[in-house]
Length: 407
Image (cartoon, rainbow, N blue to C red; front, side, top):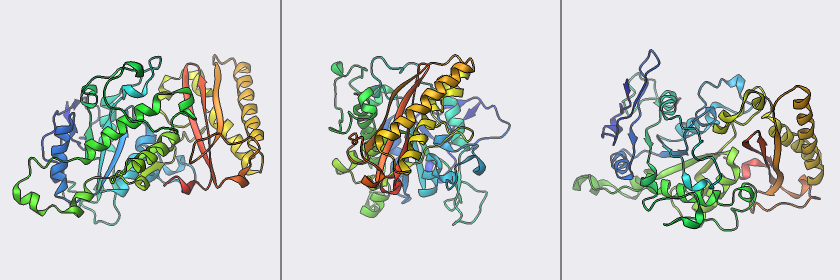
């Protein structure tokens, strides 16, 4: 058995639980402290405070894949102009001294009819994968001593692994009408796009991310000596808030909504502009967006799963050629129809059902008029959702000047 514990000088406080995982490799993995409670995590943060480090925060629901980690992805497997550090954990490791992750399957973002119980939970694999991911800082000299504060190799610094009771002290149900407690809702931005099909989803997302940011940024100072407290000034304090938080483009509405949330709530850490939106990681063979839900697909369904992406690409090509929105959507529908025919002709046991494909304003999320063309927008969101069997897959493309809303 491998005990996950800390090796860095910053992280010598004991985790609330030492998680053991089966060691299936012949080499000893690097180690990461794991905390189950906000109080235990904040003790770690107090110790980190004195080392004046910048902090990147990556909230996840687990079932980590290469889109989260970039594990095992070679440069030839990536789209052109996309380096490995564009993927979420490695992006944070590249930009921050410390990287903190949370793993929490949030009940509040699942409606009563949705698959909370079925959501993949792969904690042991997640911990092992995180222990292997690293970033080499070329600005620092090489050293084999990873515990040195001058080590040039950065690895995840801590994992916050709360139970449901920790995050929702008054309890939580999937039925909004029976929920009790405090919740966060971003009015006017949660009912479009994904919100049309999942009307309570973004309420749950906004609530849990606000809670997580509060956990990551708050330190109680209870364990610091008087002398240690005396040397802490505003500059030191500011560095130990979550300097940046990272979200994937695959959930573009979620990421943009959280940018608005941090701005509307006047959050200092992270600032709205420090909500990083990391480009979608895709399978190098067919462009399918990497997602935890891909694990639900049968072999035949996996063959047809890239249909939505291909439809979006067809709409994008038409848009960039000057076609109207209405004409672009027709091109997307033609791709879906052709792929359905292909599945039938090849004898694949796959049923596909389009939920939506739509063009939305990148600021308001409002549906744009069918007559608009690329000349009318600097940047616009093209997104969709497609059921492949019982699995609902989502994807999107940012058309135009993506730098206006991305990294």
